[in-house]
Image (cartoon, rainbow, N blue to C red):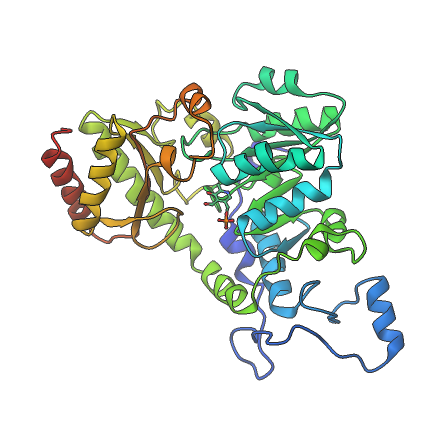
Amino acid sequence: MKKTELFFDPSVAIHDFLVFGEFGDVNPSITDSSTFTFLSTDKMEEVFEHGIEGCFLYSRHWNPINKYLSDTLARFEDTESAQVTASGMGAINCTIMQLCNSGDEIVSSHTIYGGTYALFKNFLPKFGIKVNFVDATNLNEVKKAITKKTKVIYCETISNPLLEISDIPSLAKIAKKSGAKLVVDNTFSPMIVSPYRLGADVVIVAGCVCSSNEFISSLNDVNSGASMLLGAVLDSYRAASILKNLHSLHLRMEKHSENAMYVAKQFEKLGLKTYYPGFPKHRGHKLLKSFMNKGFGYSGMVAVDIGSEKKANKFMEMMQNEKVGYLAVSLGYFKTLFSAPSHSTSSEIPEDVQKKIGLGKGLVRFSIGLDNNIEESFSRIKKCLKKLSII
Ligand SMILES: Cc1ncc(COP(=O)(O)O)c(C=O)c1O
């Protein structure tokens, strides 16, 4: 693929994909039924055998609003097809269960979301699936960990919480050569990076599996599909709200990243150890720049090391009292959210591994909010740092 063809605008890709309700409603109707009737038994049998465009059988299989959202997210990630599920873990589980059988192996980055880490380390072995954790930014380490049994190479585009950048084009080549599938969690970088365009086989975003027609059809197979059989079906009302919000995500991502860049620079100026892929000195900056889409910044996530768990906890409580944002896990909310990953979202990662990957106990992860006066918000953050004698 030529370099100029790499850049893509997901907001433009979904701009003309419009679905109306029965009465010309500007939003599609919310499906309020779990089951769908048929005018003939023949038609019902046919739908059981293979899908028919516009025909629905049962909500856990497909329902109209989930289909619209899936089709929109497929355009958004530039994949052939997509399947929404009830959560990020729902999408990850469906993907892994579909791709792996007992006896198979996964090579996974060790800097991944704690829930995914726990699934891989503690849960998958119950089904005879072994996971080899590696530093996925070291391509030789990835290659060395691959065996004949490797079915999946797994990473996050921008990793949680240390904001490392995965070399998706190179990992895709390694996966292809070894016959494994590259699965990329794009949670931290929707719009910013389009992993499928860079060679990934499956992209996880917004609780959705985005991939080829073939893979998504396999997920939906009534006899053997993980999505159909594990039942992580997304609620229709939630699907409708995600669909509506998706059309304004480009504006929110721009502000999210712009504010994050400001906060990261201020932390850096104060002499704090700051992790942000927008900094030219960040070790993944050049790589990210080489394949990121233009106009959505370097993500709204920033991490800063305060030094100790005690200080990090005090700092977060003070910031909450100052109404900087909320002491809460997760990301992408309109207010700033902060948590200390080593004792929250990454607590599933054993202490020795945390140490090895550089995840300090004093690390505070921020999902920066959409504040229209981020300078004022940062002055409150600074006040907290001063009170705690951190600066
Ligand atoms: C990178 C990443 N992947 C997956 C998940 C899981 O998503 P969910 O909580 O919707 O299951 C999270 C949750 O925060 C995450 O940060």
